[in-house]
Image 1 (cartoon, rainbow, N blue to C red):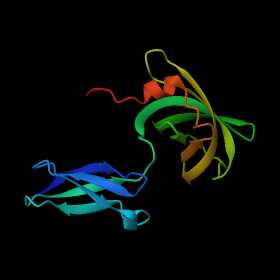
Image 2: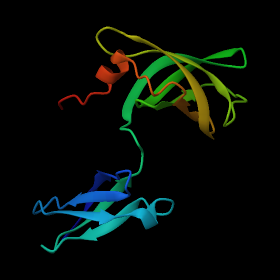
Image 3: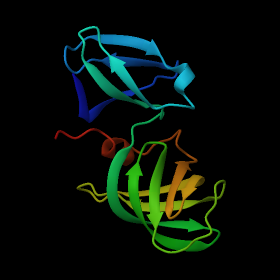
Length: 159
């Protein structure tokens, strides 16, 4: 039986191993996915119980939390309003509303107000890693010293 409505997700460890857990019977297995790192991130798995399912391999180092709140970015003295799409301990993805000349490798600053109860402010120096139209991915330059507020913000919340 194949369940195509929802695919499972697993995080790949630094040693390129992933733990696969069958959603039908709960059987777990550790596999090497080193050969898939730069190729395929979705695989089809057939468990020994006969259940077949799709599995998304997440190669990111840190969990990304989906968000939707405003902020500001500054690159080369040009400050813009942004919409933060997702956030992690080590970076963010945001959208700008108007044409821009932001390019990978540029360094700048982000000023965000988290949508938590305290409305905590977060200031980070960043480097742009990806640009896809108006969607921009950046890495925090000071991610080795995460703020307490960001750490608490990134904690999973019960559904």
